[in-house]
Image (cartoon, rainbow, N blue to C red; front, side):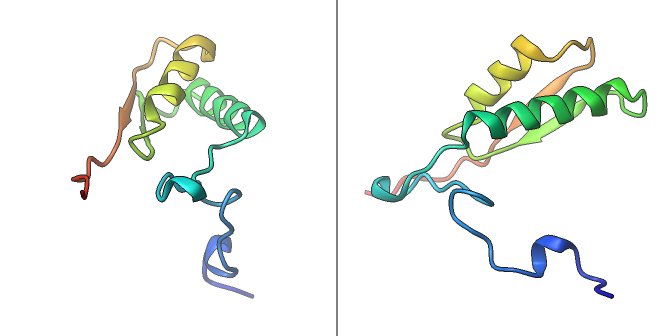
Length: 91
């Protein structure tokens, strides 16, 4: 029996477990089915009555689209805050 969480037991896969945005030739976005699964999960979580709101953390290049999607599709009066790390750009 493992005491570690499942995501620590195997190597992460680009395009499945994480979606890089730099360098440009390796950039990948979450496929629409993945965004739909996240939306449905957030809907279930907020409808559970266990929480007063949600904080969604995501890479800064894509958080606007995700929060917009949530705004359109999640039926809840609870607040959802998007939070992204802002990193300095290198020339």
